Length: 225
Image 1 (cartoon, rainbow, N blue to C red):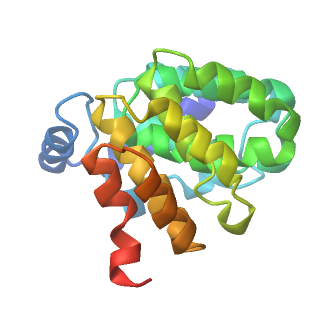
Image 2 (image 1 turned 180 degrees about the vertical axis):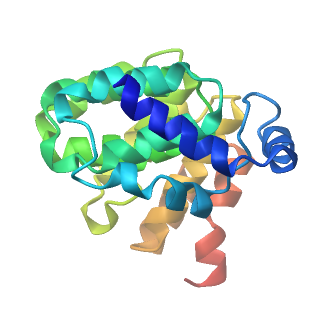
């Protein structure tokens, strides 16, 4: 593990851009430090470490990801969540606890939204029997990032979206004053409006939503997409 993270650190240090790091930190409201590496050059710099013959064993993932989550530069967390995406076919039931850890530590939209769609979303496809247990736990928690994950994990499901579940979750959270919850409600509605705009419009008309959620939810409908 130490050797793997050491190689990753060296790759980031070689591409570090202090001027861009300051801009990236400002964009994230100075919540995190950065090496200053944008997504494409970051992935190029770490391509070898993502190759199957260089990646760690599945059993090492939890320890490695939690170590990456401790490191100050945000690029480490981006790498950790992208590394996990390479193992979706190996997910076991217990890995949801790691996802929960990632969501609730160093929480911000830039990691949570990827975890929700790319990791949690794929996990519940593989283990649908686990869905209600965790979604129920998260939606009833006081953690807005767990709640946001519950709203967004179906973003890539398209026609397979459980619309009844989505509407139920929105009903439970529609009175939230949290910007990130209101925005997530709108995003989830907007995404499904690509599949069935009439159902989304009917739900919006029948539901007293925050203006932000309503506005976001109708964006694609208004465009005629």
